[in-house]
Length: 570
Image 1 (cartoon, helix red, strand yellow):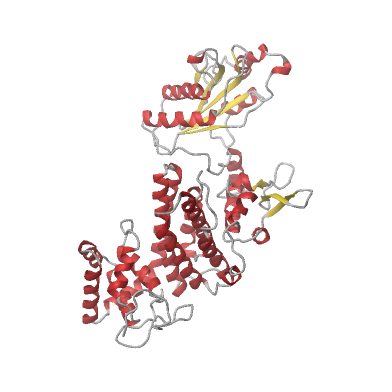
Image 2 (image 1 turned 60 degrees about the horizontal axis):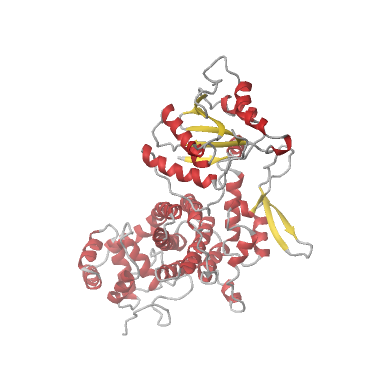
């Protein structure tokens, strides 16, 4: 159940005409009253003798108790209450009870408080009602409406439980502003899937992902073809910015600009500047020159994500919040540069995770440098192909970001951040789908190679699994469809000179595996990352012949100078 308080109005009759009218797209059906302040208000929807003017005069009658200069300029209070698409259809009597409890919760008309405001509840669809009230009480005083939005939300949570409706998560005031109905109707008329506000929010998020300065941020916005206006103080200091979509204009034909703070609480210029507060100087120049291709950037992003996963559980809240916020930047950058077959799910993951990236816990910037650099590397390395090393490292980085998002969901759960936790869980589902698309080809190649291993080599890998893993986990891995790919990876690591038993034990101990759909898949990417093996093993050779090809950074996994744990002495 979603209650929404709309902007206050100045004309009762105008709102009545809308509520009882056909709607903007003929969507209103059988408009009629379900409740009113005195149980006896005239209903122009069902009573042919009743008129809108008659109902308006009754509603506005308390205004006559005040002098002209004492009357509020905006005295029309408007609340809509909508159920979800999976909720059952409520009867008129149930909606009547909902309306009475809502006006009592808001402070409009609470029987326990004596004189209240006059109001009516109109139903013109199965799934929602509208409540209209005049903001002067019967005794001439104004109603106390402080925190009315918070109170009606709390009442909605109680009603959901009592009426057996879908339970929504309580918010904490950190969510981005929802599009208005006018914005949604405008998007429909223009043939856009999303409103201008939503499209701009995504564009600004992508522009700030990994950005290191105001100039870079505004240059990216310009490159994204949005209109930008800046607000400058007399001193010349930049105070803020607004953005507009080309072609999105008002009735006067002027572009509709949105301040960054109205797109998202963390997209105001001061909040964006906080991301740069932890930036290092000097050595940072060398880091910024790192991108050499999509595959290399994805490998580095995967390593940074896993490092964040390993330290988040024991991190202070401010540090954890910084990692989660920076993970949102990585997702935005990954979605921006992904191949066609993973782009949609990664984009949806980034959009959903935007809600999980904010809470009242203030992020301690600086701790997120590695993740923000990873986002930057992804942006400047360019778009990835959907095949070869690019495609395989995409699967590798999706696997890593999935685990960070899972950790974020657990952290939000412990902090009782209901909406953020739910958003992180939904993000994980989108990432699962994206992973399947990205991993199908490289895991298929590895599986073919694993099934072609010589029997002595295969037996050796089975032995390594049983030595390195707890017995129940080992048997689970050996029974999974991904076992053949893991066997090929262990053989590659062995050929590169690694102690595969120690390498595998270390990979399994790095983080819990319970949330993984396929433990063997997870271990494949952890091993290939730790041992600097090519993510795309299509050209790699078996341990009984040839050499393993170089990775994108130009190092052979068999090179003694290559970094990696537990290299075996020969």
